[in-house]
Length: 132
Image (cartoon, one colour):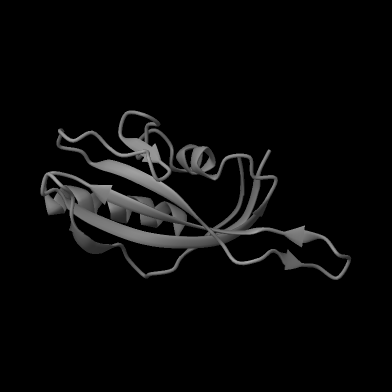
């Protein structure tokens, strides 16, 4: 069971980063946080966001090879674990790992991609004390 002490957006809101190969707009946001007992950051995030925002393998993909389908309206979500800074040490020597990740949302229209990216951001930015 993973315990997420906090998750914060590095940016205040998702921002446009271009288009994919089929000209769907891309919006991105980077996040960082601190947690322990993480087995799969990506699967934990899918669980935290819930089925109204993400469905693993249907509209949500992860990792460098987890790319959304070339066709389809979306929104499609890609979660990429970007590592994080070294663990925070406590006074008794325990370590709480820091993590970071990027979420990229694409859809046929900018408005659809932006709406999903902002909904995800509303759930993740400022989240504290989550257990998965």
